Picture (cartoon, rainbow, N blue to C red):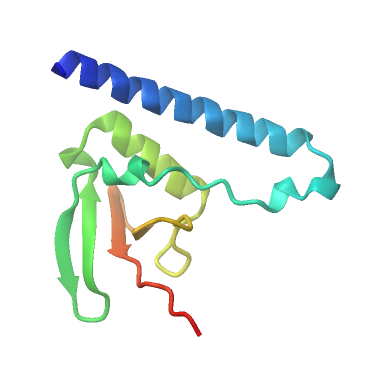
Length: 124
């Protein structure tokens, strides 16, 4: 597969994700309350975040985590991920993740996206 074909498929995937997100928002705004769609979280696909370039860090309290800097990433991809986190008010105490995500994500400071590996759920 050529670079052009790969770039085309990436753009196609990202644009269809934007269409799906817009359709979900519209559906939730128009659906009757008894369906309960307004409470259903619409998590973006994790590829939105994993396509970024992260640098590994280690903190005394936080342990291992990663940081994606705006200047080290493709502008479009970084802005898309940043907007998802910003619109979800993702903070270190209220991290953003989906049920199948390997990482949780949050914003702190300017032009940085943070992530940390999620711990596996324990079964009782």
